[in-house]
Length: 401
Image 1 (cartoon, rainbow, N blue to C red):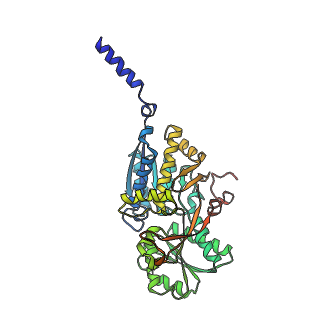
Image 2 (cartoon, rainbow, N blue to C red):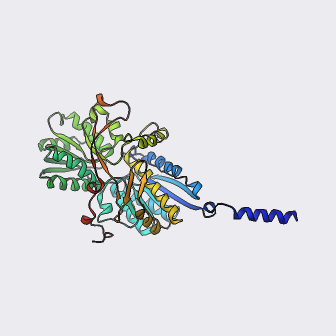
Image 3 (cartoon, helix red, strand yellow):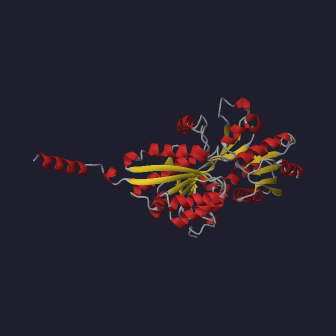
């Protein structure tokens, strides 16, 4: 009799398990980025920390969603990134890939994700082609792109009298897209592009290229590069007295981590465009303090913030669809408004473009800074619909014309 009672109690207990735990969903997320090279500071381990914080804040375990996060270094090489992505999808059970700076790698991962019918939320790469001619129903481009950078920094500097430009362009997909998009903004505003030079990626010695830019007499030297390349070219421009000689430098993609590496003495006065700044408001400050404690005191870049925001929205879609089917999750991500403490309210368009405001900042003078990481003053807000390419102009085949 006692045995029957025990069995009945056990069966009843099983029935009373919460529905969430009874239907547990296992999600495996891969953070793929540069963990050792010139983009490691702005992505790297910090992006893994950001993804973990999203899982924690979503309270995934309480909702019956078990999340495993893996990471790997793509070394900024498309072949390396492609090999990792295929192995993750084919053998390791990865459901989505996050981050992926370096546009050439991102475009390759974008294609593989489509073939394998998984999900790619890109925070690190810039090429606007990810939501243009290379758009995919499986990819969301989250944080920023070359079109928005061109509208922000390129537009502001041209309006401020910088009507002649010379570009130093990183010789791969990202640099080419950034030069193309910025040149279009400059010429539309009545400015002229006097020339451009393609620089090896990654590069260390930019002196011959900077001398060509200096000799062009262009009012603005557009740095269509990022990370370590931007840091090196700005430092070397300082050594040549380029800014002191009257020409302006346009850092077309500059991160807070770059300013930190350069120091305010060197970086002061730079105008730049970002979608996130740690010191924007109480919510960004609170989150950034948590992040910094786990990241050796370093505040987050917009790329790392974008990984958090994208992961959070993905988990909301998994919860809403009660599964991880790529088509269902992507449809839900586009249907649901986005909302998080770092980017506020936004949306994901049909072409996969995440919509939110962008901000034009100027780097403070050392005398204006109140302490470590206090680097920016806000110059202007670019509303989402002016920051990103209008759908009517999109080359994306997913967009109904």
